[in-house]
Image 1 (tube, rainbow, N blue to C red):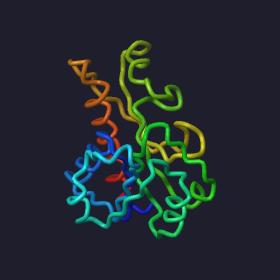
Image 2: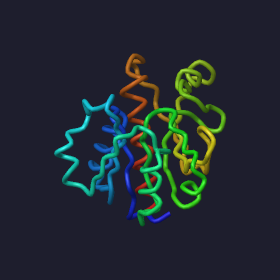
Image 3: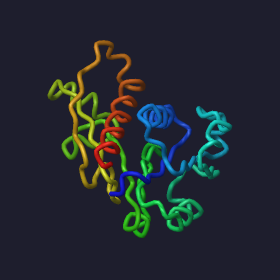
Image 4: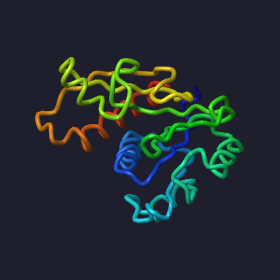
Amino acid sequence: INKMRFGLIISNTKRSKVYLTELLKNSLKPKLIILLMDKKNINANFNLNKLKKFNFIQFKSNNINDAKVTNYLLRNKIKNFVYSGYPGGIIKNELLLKNKNFIHSHSGKLPQYPGSTTLYYMLLNIKKVFCTTIILNQDLDRGKILLTKRYKIPKNKILIENKFDNQIRAKNMVLVIKNLK
């Protein structure tokens, strides 16, 4: 993976905002930012004027499989994209998966803990919390594992769902991008 050139695919979510903040805090500036946002998501978590200081494009779609989005990605020279699209956004286009790397952080120890509520299952089953960063393939929460890291369980478990989950994903992503340098 080319470590210096990467793009960032974001959506109108707190997670995407945390990703961008953490990457920039660690001097990891994406060469391109792609914002997926449809009309329902127009009240952005992002200040769009601030995004315009980057090489930035916005699509009026929340789906990476939208033909306009996939065609744009296939024409783009960047091979590696940090993916923080909408939850459940499985990439279905085989040509896209063959020609691009979509790096995604999952708050669970893969392959043992796929799905959306893995933090809770890990806490119940093994009393440990992990985050795994992968290169996505066509299957949900599957792909080449780049990093699995254990994190300390927060004392305030109320923060797990939003704040903690987003933070460990972003921290894992930063570690992966830095190690690929």
